[in-house]
Amino acid sequence: MSWNRVAVVGAGLIKMGELFDQSYEQMAAGAFSAAVASVDKGFEPELVEAAFVATQRGTLWGQEGIGGNTVPTAIGLTGIPCTRIENACPSGSDAFRVGAMAVASGVHDVVLVIGVEKMRDKSTEEGLLSRAAAGHPIFTRGETAPVLFAPFATRHMADFGTTREMLASVAVKNHYNGARDPYAHFQNEITVDDVLKSVPVCHPLHLLDCCPQTDGAAAVLLVNAERAEEFTERPVWVAGFGVATDHPYLHEKSSFTEIKATRLAAERAYAMAGVGPGDIDCAEVHDCFTITEILDIEDLGFVEKGKGGPASLEGETALDGRIPVNTSGGLLAKGHPIGATGVAQITECWWQLRGDAGERQIETRHGFALQHNAGGRGSGVAVVNILTNRR
Image (cartoon, rainbow, N blue to C red; front, top):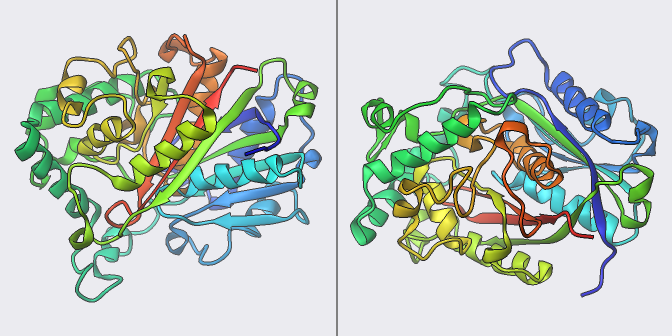
């Protein structure tokens, strides 16, 4: 497959959290300004030829069906083509993939990818919990996110001996990283005991096994490789990407110890990039629950199937481990503003590959970082993007 190379020359986000004092438009503008300010040689906003906006829960903030025309106005670029991407929890990841394809095709030279989500302004009854009564009258009745992922945890524990302490070690590690990320929703360290003693949510998941609902926005600037030096001497390149689908309903799953869409998306991304799991220096993966990260590192090929629990407990995924995972704090600590999540993960990969991650910086021996999201009811869709600092 032949395609034009794509460079990421700018990336930025706003601090994640309960942003009651900011509107949807203000959050988008903040992320865009941060991305523009990050460009080493300067960047004029008018250079943006097209934008791709990720928003998944528009119903929580009056963005049903729009977003694609709200954001250009919010950032002062009314008139440019702008497309809204909604693809479950990987919405931001898929917006990045589509934006990269727009540049790789030669249609556009300079593209903005931005994710923004308002999660906290609605009450519990009006928010995500209300979705438990939405969709198919039987298959999705009572369906909340913990209900969807808890069966994966119990099956993994039964088949591989994964323990509650192994699950908790994921939360402990990600909160440690989040405490070193100024953009994280939660910036406090926790212990295994804290996780085990937190409020039960859906067996075996407790409160600290679960990511928070978070407001947030993130943005990246993509350019044709031939123009990258106009903006920076340290671009990060798009090496490959993959997207895959699986059956959305739990009763249709063939396995509860893997997320099939993740495995398929990773195979496609690795093939496109010409690398394997052993070439990845760090990864931002979808840890909406502690069990999800354990499944992720297995399905992405970082450890053997069934070994994700021990690998997490023994520190293989820590900042100084064999394969650092969720150096930003992940969804568990940084938060999960759904449409913004994937773009924020790309921003962390961009910082790591440029050596700009500060206290969280890891050693990039091979020069590759991986970003991943899975979601859509029982994880019916997954996206994997691979970035590199190799020219």
